[in-house]
Image 1 (cartoon, rainbow, N blue to C red):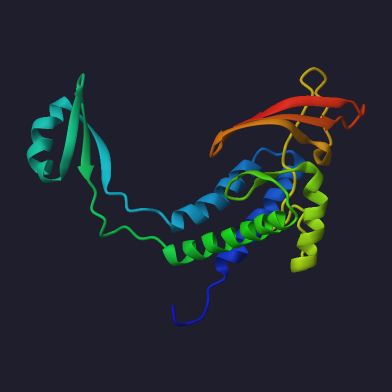
Image 2 (cartoon, rainbow, N blue to C red):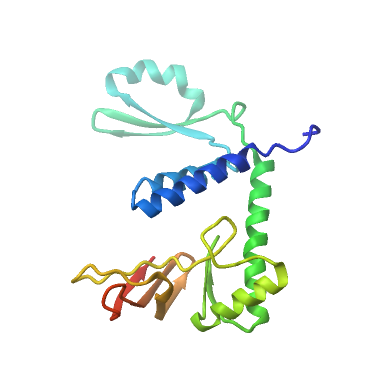
Length: 218
């Protein structure tokens, strides 16, 4: 920690991010795997200690297992011919990289807070936020982009790291026609809490120009 900064993870995340973009454009579902790689790279760095583990022991092994492990057993349940055992897991071999994780989380909050405070400055209503997204008034989006560029000299709308874009997807259930991404908006919403809401979506069809309706449920 006194030999300068290590940017290897930054290089790795950029590689994964760009590969995922390619796969999304190709319509290849492996893009979801790339997303999980990126999420876990961060999540693993802040992993909490795992202080217990579960073992399955068959009845014919139980008489031998119990006296050898009784000091580590928290609880057990007998189900038919097996015992489900919850044991103490020592944490002396548990390691994480919370120094890195804290930096990532701080940077993420900084990116989100820049967008949120700029939206507040132009009097845009923010209906709900998540780790890397927010729902605001559709007719305030362009004004938000303009103000953000004026303040920070950066383009807000895009698909690169640190940028935001409409990520709703909408398809006509009967014809399969997809709506133009930039035209999709929520016309009605119900928010119950964090990660729990429903949006009634409308968008303009790519081929026919007709209004397509649907729902986004989380």
